[in-house]
Image (cartoon, rainbow, N blue to C red; front, side, top):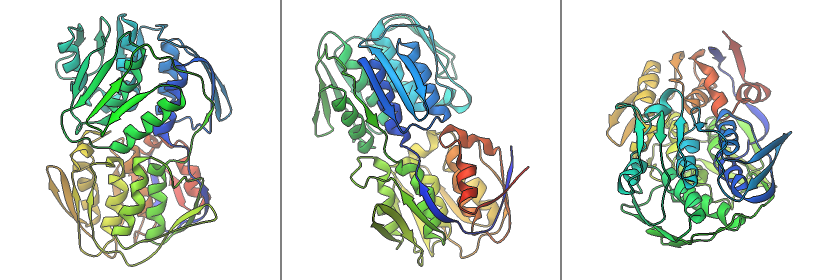
Length: 422
């Protein structure tokens, strides 16, 4: 599906969809708990559906009731299916690999599109160290077939690749018979995501000792306890609409928790770097349109904000620099090269660096035809840019938004967005 978006600012109230990061974590923890949990305010994106299917594969019983999920777990991993299909969800596959391996049975992990190429080296190193037998194709990471389980011990893992590997271990290691320790061998990036993981684990009765993000001590033989939990609004999704506000729209964002540990809450500080005023009154969060000045933004803790910030940078006076952004290259697409490729079609000058880019902003952005590269965040970012373009922007392969925000088009139109489906 392709969409044509006509210029026009957005206006209205918007309840931001629930946090995808917290949804993954709460659903998995409930699936591991001994007893019944209710997870509410769930949005059934493709990624979340993949995680729901994954916990079914390890023995959890799941009943969906509107935006609530009733999950009954066994308190341990019981293999029901010998294949876990993560679809396109990096969180699902990286969280579930060590969890599934606590069962010590043969299992295969599969996925689709770019997920088969997204690195799993941190786990493969653990497999080598623990003599865990596995098979995969030479030039792909999925399908990955693993023949035996994970054992307690000391796990050394890099902190500058993806916090998802650490989260997967934090979920799995409490289930093992003996104690374990995770040692972070480089500076840990995306600490906010680790905080989210530990918060959820604590709610479900699991204790993790965090020694200044340099090492994590995990006691074995812990038991997940059931918990009822409501998912809060997603700051990574709010970023698109806060950027829309900053470039001229008038959207009131509802349902946001400013005390959240979500790493992408950093969008608020990033916007301020561009000179944007942020208001939060009566539980309404919004950005105030203003003259935008270029900024230098560090993405080490919040790589998912890259596409939205690129739109803001494109309309700011001066040159905006993305720093410590190398992880943008290993998402659904290479979000540095692909953003450069597409935005240059609209007349924006971008210099690509190994770990970032420099975007020279313009006052006016022309329309054109853009490729989403099957990346949901590029698709949503280009839609926001289209609201202030001088002519229509056509976005190819627009259906990819279903990965994280399946009703994005409806929301966009409810705010006055003008879409023609082609």
